Length: 252
Image (cartoon, rainbow, N blue to C red; front, side):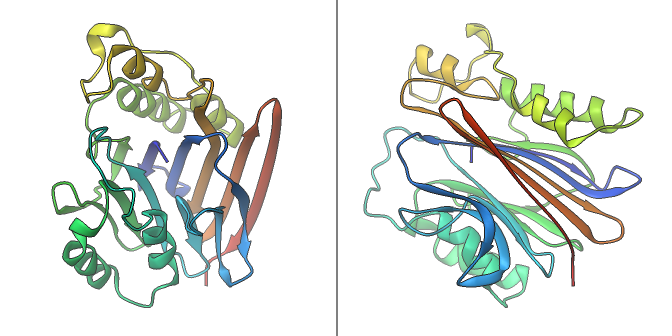
């Protein structure tokens, strides 16, 4: 997952509005979002290499979303999969605070990452690159491959677009998918310097990424309203093929 946008506790109907893109190599095997056979209370897509996920929710309202921290020169091929941190939280009976404490103890065991995790009562952001957690405050937030609300062009653009939609008269899931399909690249003077070179920084600066081998594999909309109703819509991309998966359910 390389971009997560949140409207948290700012809309009269929705407690949470989440719009996210997962960017990955095209040849990495992936299962579309579904209730898992081995964890039927959990709804998420699935990485078929290591079995974890990048974004999910369970029937009790626990939710989590992951982005990698961009550090191109880091070595960690033998490190555990970060996607298991998401599914681990969704399957855990630990409190959010206890799970965060475990993440801190195990911070050096993983390559760099960011996590949103929590429930309807409290949502947190945590990164093992600064070993820091913060309570997510009501408002509009964006997370890419640096820290929470770091003003990379795609984060700024995404937050501004989300705010315009959410604070307007009405919006639909399709409006949010249009936001996530934005292929506008930043100008060179706006690009961050994360060590990947200007050409790659430019490629990665758009909300929706396309290249020969790597790009946006899926877009996800997650809505939770004031009546605890969940709407989860995943739009997955496989070449020219586009597939939508939608589920609605009430939290326990």
